[in-house]
Length: 241
Length: 272
Image (cartoon, rainbow over all chains, first blue to last red; front, side, top):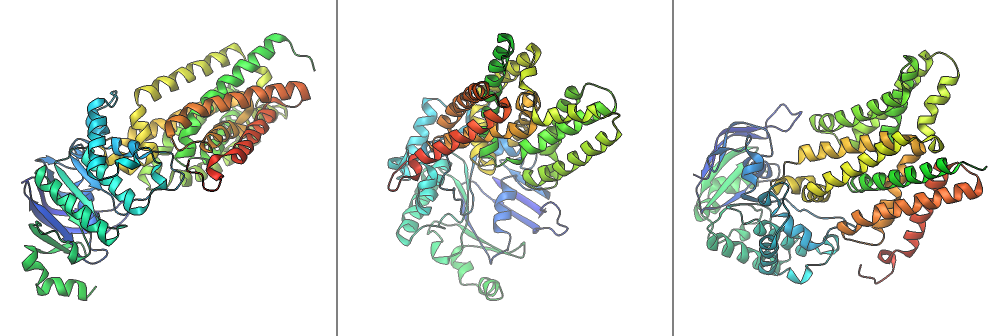
């Protein structure tokens, strides 16, 4: 198993009650998993716990290593897309800077990005169709363009795991379709393990292996999309929210 | 007022070095919204100087020590309490000011308060060779540190969370930025004083921002603008016989206003 959580409780500093409550789950290499649930269910917290950003009790293992102790190292192989990330208009960074930054962890300290890093960044930008924005300031892009640039940034990293927090926010219908197709191509071509938070059942990719259903910080369902989307548990989770 | 050439030369070199180091560190301050840093450090230094007077020790050494100590504890405290650095700075500001007043009330004599106030207002004409060496060492240290860890600082300045996501352990770099800010304020204090040092940290960077969306360019041009403000400020001070610190600060504001007026970012339809 590439990702393993055992009885995980995740706490935000200063809060007595845990946001995630006793989560136990495993995700194997090459799986595509969608995380769904009503607002405040703990979906983003789950991704940040896997990414080793948040303090948690229980066991959080990624690549067989403790995610809390080896956070910076494991993050070199994880592409984590933050939820609805935007940049102020006067942000003094260009698209190429943002895409290349995806490589920084891999390059290591005291070393400069080389030709290989620039090529990886350029290829990623080309794949996400943002290479024509290469020299544009990041703050001047539309929400959809920013989302594509951030995805390109993840790809430049050449990760083994993709953690995507609402990757379709800020995108119009056509762009959702296009980005969804690209995520699926990448997932299969690069044999990635993908964990994706989504809200809309229409956005569940055809190649999705499982849907994890969260509510109030608890894992209340884990099943194949066909089974999950037609289940009573799924309907009830949203009906009561 | 006619000044000996040695003093004028020391003033010019000192002001130039201070302008360069302040603008270099100012890039971090402006980008990371640490604007209260200048105020807080200067008042911490003021408290240190007051303490020095109260216990009959070197006021400038204690000013440096206090500002550096505040810079050192700022990052961990902000992280631990999950507070914005600006919030912690605001609290530190009131604490250091209160301590300064307390120490001054303990200190004997009336002359001492003027010494403490010189930390706030600066005394560029009294700059010594030792001060110049300190500034030079600080400038070289900043250059080396920024050169070695350029990509880490570059990423953290965009967004700490994104940098963390890239696999960069941001904590030590963030603390290093705060520490270097504290040291820069402390070492530059004697030049234009704690109250005006802010001008040299923020104004040149804010001016550079008016002309570019490229962080590399801003990092390069800010010290040059700071240098120009500083030298023109000294020239105006000598010509008009006004205090050097004030003159440099006014000049840096003038440069900023001119930059805003000329900025291509503000011209309608301009894609900058």
